Structures are given as C-alpha cells and as structure tokens.
Length: 316
Image: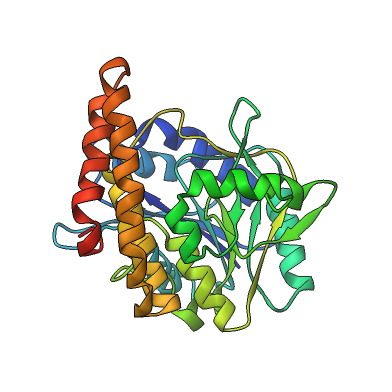
C-alpha cells in the first residue's frame, strides 16, 4: 500500500490542482492508496477545502489538524503525518511525500518510481526531475554539501559545478534516471522501512530548511541510496503563493546548513565562521550600494545584515 503525505500551511489556492491530480493518479494504481494531509494551522480555508475534497475524492483522504501547542514545522508535520498514516494503514509500505505546490500531470511517474524501488532493494528514496507550469526546469536534487561550498554560497557553487560538468544538467543528460546524494521532497517516493530506520525527519535539529539533506545523509549511513527519474509532467511550482515560512527563509537556511555541517562533519567546522563572516561583509557591502535602486533592496539588505551579525552565534 502507498499513502501520500502532505504538510499543508496557508496555500489554499494551490490545493485544488495539488489534490485533484494526486488523487486521480493514485486511483489508477493497482494497489490500495490514500492521502493524509497534515494542516499546520492554516487560516485561509485550507482545512475546509480538504474536508470538502475528501467527500468526492476517488481515494480516501484524511485530514490531521495540528493543535495549538504542537510543533508545526515542516519536519514535525511530516513525521506526524507518517505516524497517523501508520495508525490508519499499518500495512502501508511506501510514502509519497507531496507538497501543496506540486501538480502531477504524468500518470507514469508513480508507477515508474515504484518499479524502480522494487528493482533496487537498497534505494530508500526515488524522486523526479521537476518543472514549473511554464516548462522551466527546477532543482530536483543535489550533492552532499562541503564546508568550503557553504562558505562560497550555493549560487556560486552551482555555477562552478556546471562549468566543471558536475551540475544537475550534466547528470541527467541523455539518461532515464541517475543517482543523487540528495533528492528534494517535491515529490518523492519513500520506502517505509528506510524511513523508520532513521526515524524520519529531524524536527529538533532540522525543522525546516535542509530537511532533505539531513534525511539523505542519515539514509546513506544506513546504506540506502537515492535516485531521480528523468521525466516530464511532475510540477513543482508555487505560482508565487508563498507561505509564512518563506518570510525567514534566508536565515533559516543558514541556521540549518551550519547545523547540518556540524552534525555530519563534526564540531570542528566552527573554523568556517570567520570565512562566512567575510562573505557576509561582501554581500552587505554590495547590497548597500544596490539597495537604493532596487525593489525590495532594503529588505534584502536587512536580511543579510542579520546573517552578518549572527554568524558567530551559529545564526541563532
């Protein structure tokens, strides 16, 4: 059996396409399927939409509404969704982690992912090459980051990898699938056995950003691999509908990336802080010059200033 897990928060405008395409694809599978939506406290009608959708859905849809005092982070929400799914469907063998900004237009995506997982017993996660509704490619996975790459910043690292022929475009060119250190959860098929072996996501240390990286790292330590299927029709596009989580994305990324480095490389990575400080000084200087002439320039400058002033406290 397969249960799709969704962590929903304040994106009611995306739920129609998200749930409609997901349910339609699940209903065509030759196995029992269901959807469990974890709502992290939406106040935009998301809960009501899910409840109404459940009455006409071709597959069972369950809603778990988080309580006021629950941890409603991305990681905690999906862990709770998996826990609730196991209570309702103890026979479930796979999870399909799906996001509100996903749209499934390829009926072969899930069957191919299931077949691939059946053929590779050491695969814990299968993902897909994802695109926006316009057809533009979006990121699907990544390599495990190194301390020096964190210092340089992700945009620079991506350009360097592309020039060296180690970027994502080089990995997927002319292939039906490829191995990836990390597969982004938008969406992914997860083997339940592997998920439970590592305890799912880590809401204590990695509540939001970098959850995919941390999960992949812990799965690798348990000898599981991750792969990406090269196909079209798997959409990851928020259509500029941003949740409240997005507001503090830059700082949360740096907090999580530093913590990720510390967890998987060791406390010695504290040597990075002076170099990160110098990077932020350069960023703040450039943004201070550009801010008066850019839309939202002041906000970007303020965000980088916060990074500069918190780097020696691990961005806390």
